[in-house]
Image 1: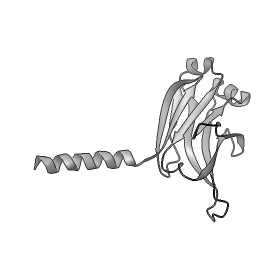
Image 2: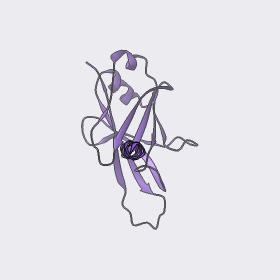
Image 3: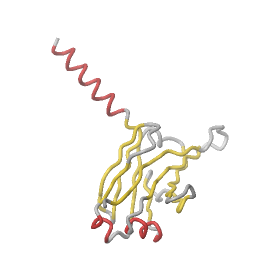
Length: 146
């Protein structure tokens, strides 16, 4: 009976872990500042930092991984501010799969001023013969605590 109960607990724990479809590691000036874990289809969530965290920011790097962003795709990150028009479309860092450097001065200034940014990854199939459409996956929102 104990074995059945332990297997059930293990199954539930593994199911909960496997539901996280996208994991985003956030690095500020090369130091890991947090992690966002999102389930497939989730379009809310993110990280909130103190004002002092953004005070000396020069470089924002994100590392994405997970089932909904892996595979045979070309990936670009879209950074969106107040409207739906991207402020920046960043390509993957050469030699680092799933890593994106965001050094745009307008985005850094926006974070320092306490305004949020929302990030999406745009996935384009690497196979040019594929009929799969280009899709966007929500990566999270970075904000500043008041």
